[in-house]
Image (spheres, helix red, strand yellow):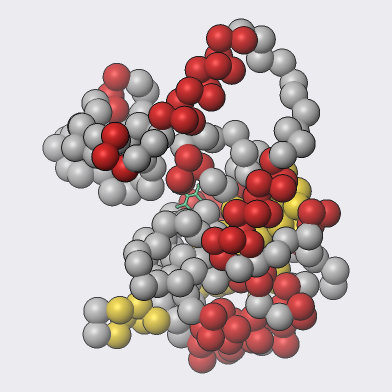
Length: 255
Ligand SMILES: Cc1ncc(COP(=O)(O)O)c(C=O)c1O
């Protein structure tokens, strides 16, 4: 399919299906005229080859349990290697229901009730709810706005990470909502601080594939071997494909 075949100007009424984004639970009862920027999902149709594949599957008509397609992991490994220069070991890949549940699972597996999880606001609001719902303590290290660009507060992170109650960092890379694609140097500084202080990094990289030209996304787990051992990497192609049944966790937690 060439790019010209896709009509990016077509406005599709999302209210025809019970879409969350334009719903009053997001916009408020009086806010239906607002632009719903609070939910990061797609207003365009998926690409025709994806629709065709889903149509074919639909016509089959039986929707019982399935095995993982043999070409899924090779496709994913190839995607990361060619797009992001990161070679993933097949046995480091785990499937999970979605990113938010995976953040909660990581917290319950690797921290205890009352333990602190560091977040860097402003950040995707569900991070706060997950921490509260799992009876963990939110430790806030706000980003700093410098001349119109958000930066990380590395001194703040160092200070907070030395608190033995801080056991985990929920990183957002690229960062929703401020849109920063963290550089390799910035990620290496986080990795260094967290590794020295025994803080496990859980990196939500759901927006990995959506960056403006000139901004190079670095998978956190593609840093050094030592840093990769201190990270759970969460990726979901749904933002690009809108095929919302596939989530993969890259897991290399051997502390
Ligand atoms: C940073 C971030 N993480 C997670 C999610 C939600 O992921 P999932 O639907 O896989 O739970 C979103 C959705 O907007 C998001 O922006």
